[in-house]
Amino acid sequence: MSESTSLDSSQGFNSPLMCWDLFIEGYDAKMGMAADRADLIRMASSNHWKHNFDFESELFRCGNTIIVTDPSILIVLATRNMFKMNGYLPQEVIGKKPSMFQGEGTSKETTRAIRNAINQRQHFEATLVNYRKNGEAYPCFIRGYPVFNKSGELVNFIAFESELTEK
Image (tube, rainbow, N blue to C red; front, side):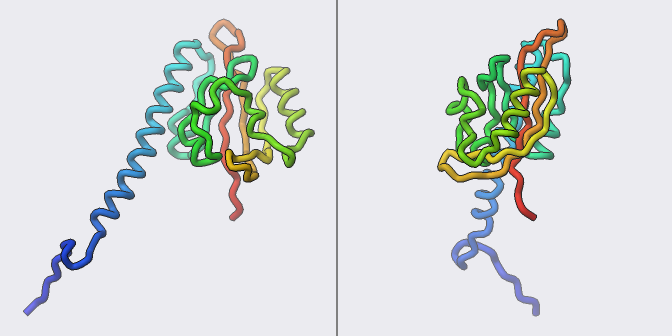
């Protein structure tokens, strides 16, 4: 005779509920990334961006946080996954400068090099010590690009950011 086991909650098996919790958490993250992607595509379209960035790859495959500023370097868009990286909600950073993430451990030399690239409207890559909302420092790798419209006017800057983790 074979024995069968029923996996119902009366026997203390809560796995299905825990699986749903994990599913919902992952689903919410993917839906947030999809909404961010749509926002970025709308911004690119309305500002007539000349460059075509692969937002799907940057958000879904790479897990990057994306920040878009206006030409005066005020943040106009930040993706929702920023909260996971540094504890800030996108609405908390809109209208502020990215320097809000910097602090005493941030290299002045690196920030000067970034500022020079921005002033010259050039692409840059840099690793900075940034700070979370709770004050904790973390290494942040940034790839920044000036964004021009089809008429050649500077309309935005975009940064793809990721926290560097030790292997």
